[in-house]
Amino acid sequence: MFDPHSLPLVQMHQIVKSFGDNRVLRGVDLEIRPGEVVCVIGPSGSGKSTLLRCVNQLTVPDSGFVRFDGRLMGLRETAGRLRRLTEAEVLAQREHIGMVFQHFELFPHMTVMENITEAPRRVAGETKEAAERSATQLLGQVGLADKAQAYPGQLSGGQKQRVAIARALAMRPRLMLFDEPTSALDPELVGEVLTVMRSLAQEGMTMMVVTHEMGFAREVADTLVFMDGGVVVESGVPEELLANPQHQRTRTFLERVA
Image (cartoon, rainbow, N blue to C red; front, side):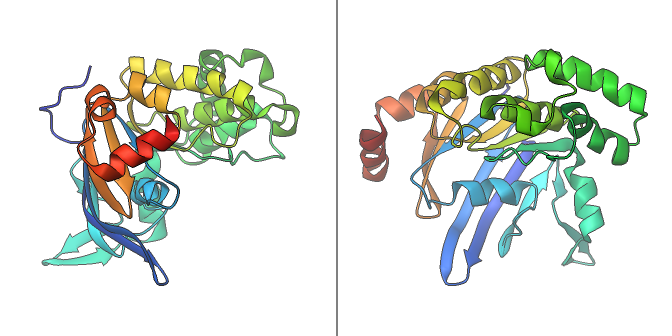
């Protein structure tokens, strides 16, 4: 159980982002505390995934800033001015932030074991033996202990996504970002991925999850955030927000997805 009075692990302040003439984010503030599970819901095009990607700077905000554990992401303040970090410096900042994508993003030419051990060996400098020990443990954790030598093309969508989760966990992240992790899966495969995510939440992993899975959000989230039109319309405890939304935009959305 997270402490709502603890210092935020993630602070997002007045995040603005446009793609051409399309202003996707319009000044978003959001905080995530250690051990907290934040689920972000809203219609397509509301800015959910863009906001998520701003956390680890896969998408660079036009203005505003993100702090992770008190440190600016992607920026350095020098003599009162902000300057953009190099890509190598940003990569180093991402080391403790895991991300799971909608379409898995596994390396098709690598085995499951190689996919999971690649970053620990190349980025964290782990030995092959240590990385493989950790990967074996993680594959057991996600229910795929027998798939270490399989290739992604031999796996179902649900299995690929569980490998992707294990790969992200291999870097021992302090924060996990999930960008609609079940939306590319056949309905019968969704449950196996959500089961792994539930167990991570129960173990105290800090998580930000963009999702359309309302049942999962109701059950697992500590905080539910509803976005529309590039802004946070409202946020709160899932049971309260879902049962008694304060804004008409939220009510209309929930009626459509119920």
